[in-house]
Image (cartoon, rainbow, N blue to C red; front, side, top):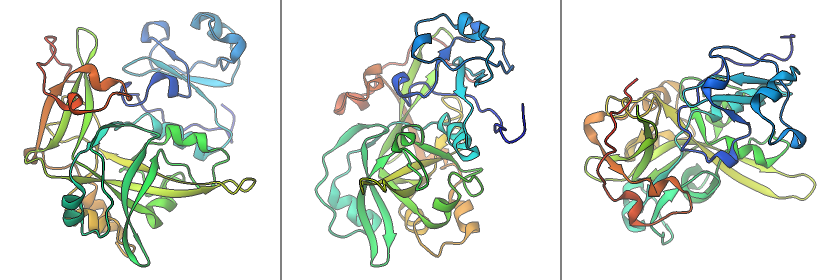
Length: 325
């Protein structure tokens, strides 16, 4: 691979449920069609290639994309023109992609120390690209604002990159060019009262779980936000991303990442403009497993358009033995 066009280390895709297939910026192949742990020079499937077999595409041998093996298949990723874009795509496959916010506005306002919080409609299946309620600190104090979930960096050429920017890794958020500035200057807290993860089953398929605090209290995801402006039209988009970390022992059998969860004091500390890096590192640790609960739910939640109490209704877990590693 020539210098100046270097990819970051490949990361596995661990949850196909968090971002619908239609929104992924690549083509997907089954792991049986591509040798594992190998990079293949191949052509990026343009419109004229769609519908062609993966073997025909691979046979073209053009150095314009990379095949990455993963637990759910091999991924075609275009080689980006900018290193930061490559880091964005790298981060995009580490997912926490659905959550709920059902807590009444008055309770949220008291919990997080907010004022003038508008009435909120209960939401049971919040998904990427949707507006999410967010708490951030301004010169006049804390404010509640809705941001689009999917970070659009201020330097991005197109806002569509936000569709792939729903998460950032806690381990590298302070140094990655894609997130470093937002981490230093534009942190936000995203209130929630539960989230979903999908566990892969040995017999095929996945089991959805709803995870929340053991007592049902609200919490907040540690997040980043940014403001993007289109110079031509003047359009402004304010957007956000959720930071993920390693799982606690409750989450580990279900998924290999979990969102950074903050209690009320942690959320207030996270958004402080004068917060020191060391204090932020402490906040980005896995939430205590003893303070959480996990309930299996039906595949009704798999479809982002579905909303309502049925999403969180407990159900019997699939009969297949869960995949632990």
